[in-house]
Length: 507
Image 1: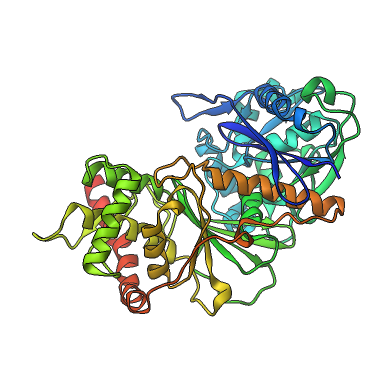
Image 2: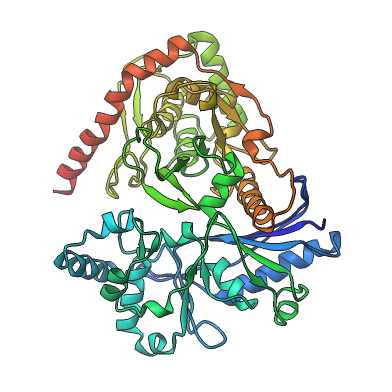
């Protein structure tokens, strides 16, 4: 069978891969595009830039395959694209746009008047990045654009599928980020649409399952992307869902951690599961018949990079790891005696507080720079551990991806702090301070798109998620894990103390 052509249209670039049915990448490409930012909090992109970048990436790879089985699409979520007759009527408003704060309050008040709690209805906390609020703002500030709108899509994957000849579609994962989705019924919410001043007929259809064939490339495909007419178009889950599937696969119950610039614990759970749940996640996203729980820490690899620069005089990651190995040889595994909050600029989990700042507790005259660096890595591990349920067996191994996963000492710290065996998936491009779009995570997102594409087409395949591809397993040290478990409540309480200090400073 011909390979699958997979595109991940992310925040800063399109990443593409030809993946065969054994899961091997035959060719890869990455092409960047720009974002327009404005002083008032605006963040927009030109949809034509997505298409130009996708065309360039595909052209770099098609020499490796004369034909493809399908075009599998994923990408950034929670963008607002106002579709006109043949093209968008304006630039896309991105999920990072924060200009709709007043409209967010208005929608919340309208729903409250009708007895609805917007956060509870949507399943996620709503703020100025809500697509519902974005639309209400545009309807007020750009009336002509709203009047020209003939439909809406919510990310570059849905937009590109539509431009290629499919109807307007939205995957469930992306839909659950928009603020317009009712998490209880798993349909668009008429109440939120009314509050946003949005005609529900403009909303796209919702896909079913983990991925869906939403159409075939039309006559425009050759001009737009250099593809033949008639290629099946599979709309995979948005990038967070695709990455989760690419790391752990489609079976629920397996957690994974990311140690990129930011960090998170992600797990797939059955919606009907009665299994005890961890503390509130920062995001609860629909994923086929399941739910994707993401507990996101804003500074993970970013905190590690800051600590290397601050405490280790700009040491490289391999140099820092060598110092950690020497420290472990001297002191053994276990707590440093310090507690660190890695929140360099606000936090999303285990508390949601944009004003929260970091803290270091427990320094004395014997504290050395390498102790402070090790404690920072501990702090990230502690922050992630608050999202995890107690380990119950061998199946609770935690697959870790992202740049920080390349650090063996950090993987051991994560294993000891969480009490979970940690499986690392390394690559030659990994580093603890690598950007959020690390090689492993990008591969996972494209793998997830390939898995859902093969499944949607009913193809026999052997595309394995990263968690099934081996990798070193770091077991927790029992004594160290017990010591860290005793400290976990104190670390969680430190967030509240730091918030109180921050409140005094702002007052």
